[in-house]
Length: 466
Ligand SMILES: Nc1ncnc2c1ncn2[C@@H]1O[C@H](COP(=O)(O)OP(=O)(O)O)[C@@H](O)[C@H]1O
Ligand SMILES: O=P(O)(O)O[C@H]1O[C@H](CO)[C@@H](O[C@H]2O[C@H](CO)[C@@H](O)[C@H](O)[C@H]2O)[C@H](O)[C@H]1O
Image (cartoon, rainbow, N blue to C red):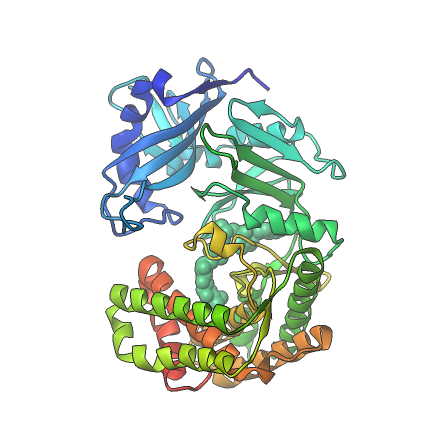
């Protein structure tokens, strides 16, 4: 590992200015950029670390930058400081043709003037540096690379970037490990590392156990930023979304897999409930939960006008939940996955299912994502996903979705000894909350998909489960 130098903003005044015009153009085009639709007016440097120093054919910069977007909603009187993003920037004289798609641009002035700057995740020489740093438990400037003592990471595993659409970015090493680099960073315990580590300690076979991770320790912050997690790569696995669409296209039954997914979800919930605190939710807390759902609905209706006519019907799902709590109903809350859908479930060639991506809904504050919640939230996510699949592959396949949803709940009940369908008010509230989230997500990221959650909104607002 070459000796690394950390450049705090003060010692590299020209670095960010040199990149600024290029990043303003490049960053908003990235799928993982969370501030879409609002102009980026500038950047400030949170941390810069040279992972490969200048001098060779390639130099490698690890940057944490804050993107300024003045029209981000303020939190009370405090202006939003702008989101912090993790960037891995390669710098070369010229790009070899294989790296052409990774080009960010050519800075015109400053320390990088005349060089070629690019997204280094596409460059195997660059991403090898990250794995090597985890292997050697390196500390490079403010970056801390750590690993699980019980897992061996081989030398020289060939990296390749994952090109699938993602909220973050991943690199696979020799079909043995996969490193997920988180893009929008928030300080504090990140559930994407916390929950898989917890489940590994519980010997849960349902989640790939973290083999390594990287953190940034920044001045003035008690908490580190989790920057990435390395997990065993499930070779030959297919995600539940792909599998469901494939079976739908062939007109094949998916209820066996849906049942197995229900069982896997319940196993993970039981392990999390054993390992981490659970709480009882009475009237006051359910009222708060319902109010949160109503607030999200109001914000969503502001952002997506198509939701407005449905708002009263949707709101009634949340009020019905609060009413039930007012009558004395209580529920248990515990740590859950937080953003469960078919794409987060991987089926190995052997037929076993694993759950991945415990980050929770990336747009929610970390503290909220780490709060104990009713398990029905994950269940609702999966039920929505069967509905999504049924609406995404040609004419809506309502029967297919219904049978998968029923099989999933039965599978869940086999293990948890509790069938989610016995609590229809709770289920409807959570499905509604999820569908509202999806409307905002699709409007922001994939407007062509908006009709899928809107179809569910239509039914849920009329009190019919999709
Ligand atoms: N352990 C793994 N084995 C095989 N593929 C994986 C593994 N973890 C993630 N993937 C693949 O990488 C993709 C992105 O991972 P995910 O954790 O969902 O990232 P994001 O938060 O960016 O969406 C997944 O859809 C899956 O196809
Ligand atoms: O990037 P993540 O996987 O963390 O999750 C976000 O993106 C998902 C889409 O990629 C989105 O999921 C929605 O679309 C899926 C089909 O592509 C569908 O299976 C899900 O049920 C639906 O919610 C997810 O909501 C979002 O957080």
